[in-house]
Image (cartoon, helix red, strand yellow):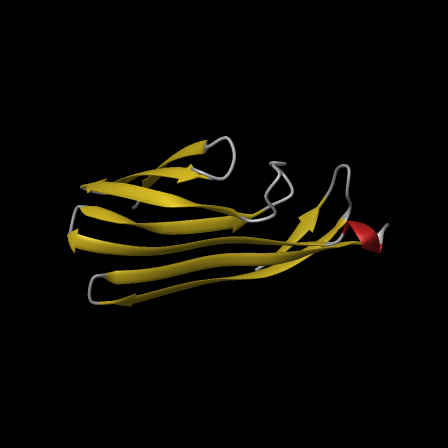
Length: 114
């Protein structure tokens, strides 16, 4: 992947996405490094990683972590759990980050495959 960054920071963001599945275990990661062309001290690494297990085709649960500068907390890396459900071509996933470390963060996603 290669992206452009514009706003408070201006630069380029090369990255990659990897998805590995073995039987009912899945590992997914999306990573990028943001190079600020105006101020190299603003460069940063972003990651979103999930490790999940799907005991049945329509349900999965697992661990997730992220590192981002968009959401500021006391933790540099947000750690958490995920629970996901599939129905036909729609995927619903809920994440709970920082449970037990700081104030928890909840994230809900909906994905549609076509």
